[in-house]
Amino acid sequence: MHRLGVCEWEVKLWISSEGESNGAWRIVVSNVTGHTCIIHIYREVEDSSKQRVVYHSTSGQGPLHGLPVNAQYKPLGVLDQKRLLARKSNTTYCYDFPLAFEAALDKSWSQHSGTNNPKHKANLRVKELVFADQKGSWGTPLVSVERQPGLNDVGMVAWRMEMSTPEFPSGRTILIVSNDVTFKNGSFGPSEDAFFQAVTDVACTQKLPLIYLAANSGARIGVAEEDYARIRSSVIAHELKLSSGELRWVIDTIVGKEDGLGVENLSGSGAIASAYSKAYKETFTLTYVTGRTVGIGAYLARLGMRCIQRLDQPIILTGFSALNKLLGREVYSSHMQLGGPKIMATNGVVHLTVSDDLEGISAILKWLSFVPSYAGGPLPILSPLDSPERPVEYLPETSCDPRAAICGAMDGSGKWLGGMFDRDSFIETLEGWARTVVTGTCEAWRNTCRNCCC
Image 1 (spheres, rainbow, N blue to C red):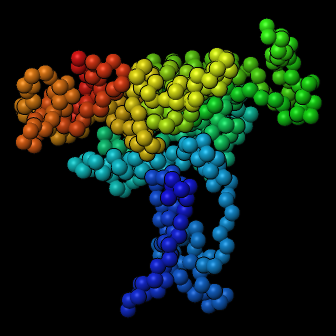
Image 2: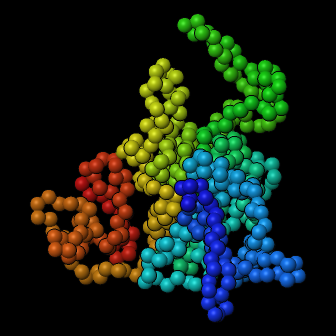
C-alpha cells in the first residue's frame, strides 16, 4: 500500500454470531512511514438521538469515534500534504522518524528475548528542541517543547530521545537533528545553520550521541520575494562575454529584506562544517542519508566520519546537469552516477548501505548498541549468549575466510562452527572499500570489540 502512495485505508467486516461481536465492524489502518501501522477498531452503532449510524471505538477513543459512518472523508490536511511532498522527494517526512525509531526499538527488543524489557514504561520518550528565542539567531540556546508536528518555521528539526534499549534498559539519551525537505526544499540558510550548530553544541557539552538525518538541497540561494516584480533592482550582476560571443550574467549579490539569500549561507555552511567536525572528536556522530543530500549536506556526511546511505539516495556536491553544462556534453545521466552507493560505498565515505528507512533506523540503533550512553562512559554489556569456555571450532582447511573466523560458519553437514566472537554479533563496515581487508564491529561475550582482518 505504501508503494501505491496509500497511507490510510478502511475495511468493513460483518460478523455473524450470537455473541456480542455480532454486527458490522470497521478497521482503519494508518501507515504514514510504510513500516509503522496504527490500527483503530470501531463498531457500527446506531445513535438513536440523531437517527444515524456512527463509529464507536472498542478501546479508548479513536479519531473517528462518534462520527457518522457515511460522513465525507476529510481532504488532505497540512501534515498529509507535507508527507506527500516528502514522498515526492523519495524520503520520509522528518516528523515521522520518531515513529520509525519506536518501531525499530520494538524490533530490537524482540531480537533480545533473553533481556528483560521494562514494560512499566515506554521504550521511547521524545521531546522536540526549538530555539528559546523566536528570532533564532546564532548563539540562541535550545529548549525542549511538546507541540504538534509540522509547526516548525526553520528547515531543520531536532529531538532529544530517551530510549530504553536492550543494552541500557534503564534508558539512554541521544540527540537527533534532521532536515525538513518540505521547507524550502531542505536547503541550508542562516537559521538552519544556527539551529544545527546549537544542536551540535548541546551534544558536545553533554557528551551525547548526535545523529544527523540528511535530506537536503545544499546551501540556499534565492531572489527576494518582494522584488520579483522589480527583478533588476534586487539582483546585482555583471556581464561576462564568452569567447564564442555568448553573453552571460554573473550574479554578484541579491538584495532583499529577508536574510539568507546569498553568500551569507556559505558562511553558515562553513561554521556548521567546523562544528560537526568538532563534534566527531568530542562525542559520537553518525549521519544517515535518508534523502538526496547536496553540497554542505554532503560535506557533513563526510565530516561526521560515520555514514549510512540509503541505496536509492545520492550524496553529491554538484548536480549532474550542472556538470554536463560545464563539460559541454552529456557525460552523466543521473545523480546516482556521481554519489550513489556504487560510488560512495567503494570510496570509503559510506560505512553501511540500507534499502529503506526502517532498516536505516535499525542500523543506527545497532551501531549505538556498541557505543556508551555518553562519551567516556562505560561500554554497554549484556549477558553473554556464548560461553567463554567454548572452543573456536572454525579451522580453515585451505585458505582462511576472515568472516567465518570472526563470527563462525556452518560446515558441510550443517553443524555450526563457532568463530572467535559471539555468533551473529559481527557487523561488517566499509564492505565495498579495500575488499582485501575486512573491518567491522562485533562482541566477545557481549563485550564490544572492533577488529580488522586481512
